[in-house]
Image 1: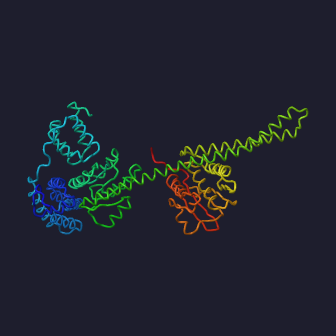
Image 2 (image 1 turned 60 degrees about the vertical axis):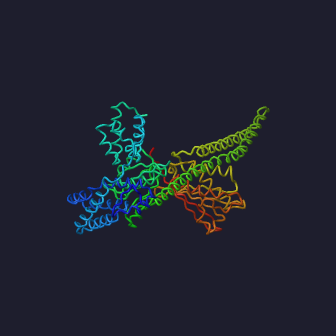
Image 3 (image 1 turned 90 degrees about the horizontal axis):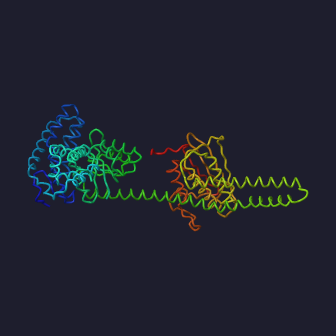
Length: 195
Length: 374
């Protein structure tokens, strides 16, 4: 089931992951893109430990383990599992952390820049309609908001100008209420009324 | 298109879930932590919630607890998402009211199958509740209709007597010497029977208004019971001797509840006694006793008739279970009684019986119903 869009990477069992997703390569690619955001995870774990927050560090390792499992990154999964275990039992974890860190960076380096672009240019939509759709999605905390933003990125960039990066980050992190406030603000400034 | 709420802190997992659910036509709302989930629920009503266990600050269990505390959200089916295979975790999830759990990493088929199943079950449950409510209301209206004929028949007697006495007075008034004693007799006949007719109409009015409107209000429980029994005797069954024993001091039986539903339950139980305890139409006795215990009223309906066979006793509240199908029994009466008493009146119901010795049904009702806000 080799999908041409997905770069083959050692340590990433794409077939297993795809079969769990009913062969949905688009979703797998989305997950891979999100995975790239976790590159700082080992640093975060480290700083939690320095701050004495062992439970929190353990939770982060647990999360990393889960994401790795979902992607079919078995080596990373077992290292993160080991790290989580050591953190929980108070055993010496430094080596496990180091191994996790190096496997994670290896995977990210292999994927970064090699993933196909998510959306082609979609037909542009009138501004008022765009705002109305986005507003509605944000109001319902609907995950489609992320997709709409990606698809119609030029339109939103145009509308939001300097606020665009902030808006984009908020939507990517599902902070929909704050994102909506920014959208409303821009709509008012541009004189776009909601449909 | 059903809307689902996904509560999950890790974006990669949200993507996976959305990617599996969206193509099936579900609309997916997202919260990334417990607090945000509660916020989302204030404006969005999902048909099902998928809830991650391991989340920062407020974990899935605590979030579940808070969701279940709200009367508006507690009925939404909730499925835990967990990569912890710990059995004690799963048990805890179920104890908190979750209907299922899904293991991570997600298998699309498994996730979808579970979501579909629970959505279907939830809809069936809601439909069932609606049907029981509709059935209850119908039964209450039917009771009123049945009573009308009986009441009308009963009124004939006192009104007939009043008519006769009035006729006599009219004749005597045109006579030379009016027999004073006879006159006094006639007048007292009229007075007594007018009062009797008046009481009958009043009782009927009270009970039928409760039956039709069934609102939650403060009433005198002893009075509701007495009026219902009176109407039952008068309109439905004279063969059955129903004795009301109120062991509470006067004025000590104030109750806040649905009088119409209570009347309905009582009528149902009395009718069952007539049909099943004393089936051959022979006369029999039923004792209706009102007592109190802690913060509850205890209402016991006891007959000394046929009794219920031991193998049938555990089944009497089962929908459609009846030994009287040949006589047209639907088997729904007791199951509706059970639902009304436990869900609507927030009480409990117990049955004791032995063949040949009779049956006793005990209802326990809170003194005052606690209604959800708004």
